[in-house]
Image (tube, rainbow, N blue to C red):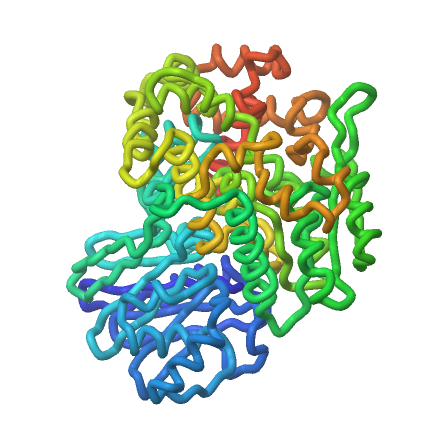
Length: 595
């Protein structure tokens, strides 16, 4: 829900209101229902609203509480806002709106910086405290909602997207060599606070930042994930009962908080099918949506999962819509999808999300999605492979996850961009953090708190919000994740992974969906690069802009172009290395070169 932006001056000057307007305009697609702005002294806010909770004008933003001397811009949803509202009323607060935004304001006034610990949901918000002349920024535990920052000696700006900050002007768009190493090693994940641009940073998940007009900064982490076993051992049956209770709470009691209809993105996999099964009795006329793509021909990977999604839609009698996308549309619409990327993202899900969100947004404003279940409950094939390895935690992880080793990175990148193996250093440091009992506990915690933030979670917000569609992810309910983090790894990995979810689903959804081989939602044209898609990537990588930029060694590019489908030209988790190179260059040409 929504797009936010703002500026705080440190030099006594008036905020650049034209920059706020430019940033707000760039965020317009995130919030088509209302545009608002606010400025006072050294502070200015911009807001674009997607109306989901309290559809009235009383919930428009920026939200000013004159009595409390607080001003808010907020992106997201606080699912437990009703309970918090009741608690705040008991403390003597009165409300002028019915939604979750005002609850944030009152909670901040009542509990200060610690208010974020009480919020269950996804959020990025900024509060201007007129009493102390302080700007307070906060981001949810898993970074589901983004918050980008750019700062110099004169001011700080923030926005819900990186391109919005660029639109504001005055951003250092030089490439960050450290971020590039992360980008090309971790499937385009650049962990916070970095981005690929030197002048843009991200507020890390589960963090707050308080800034004064003197440029003083107080940044804090308010939540961490404990991945140790409980002091009192639990039986398998108890784990399964607790998981079901936590998931039901996350789905039925929390993610349905909306004053508009809520649907489900139904892929045909276990996770989204389980969501439909849990919701069918609670949502009359439940709407479900599936997308598939054109196959590449005989013997090629199947490009849709309609066989399974149709079973779920029929069993639960949902109002189902199925979209089949021809490769010609994928090719034609790719430039739009790249133009909407807040950061470069190579996952096939990006174009899938872009095209399905366009269609779904014509029917609903909110959908639930199964993202996060594989990372939380151990569903990916590389987890048991890592676990079976020997060596250090880093060695076990990198052999099955890194897109390329250091030697190949140096072969790929021009010498001017060479750096040491800094991604290995980051991963080793993160895996060695305390409060994780086993190697897999270390991996899953790192995945859920760091990697997932800048891969599936980022695209789940960024791309659907380009169509004013909010996606909610129940499997990343923080209480469900905390429960799963305490769970014995062998329980998660039973029956090929995600055993707790499979056990919950038995008797609710068909066994054929539960026991099917795991799908990875391919867009074959971006994985098996051939025909017009190969020519597109060739034109990007051979363009004068790419050659002038000088990021890549030409011999490496030529090698990929000559044999894009050679086995060694796929990453360890089956991504096209050619698409990796082309996508980053394409994103830079659209977002940076065209300034």
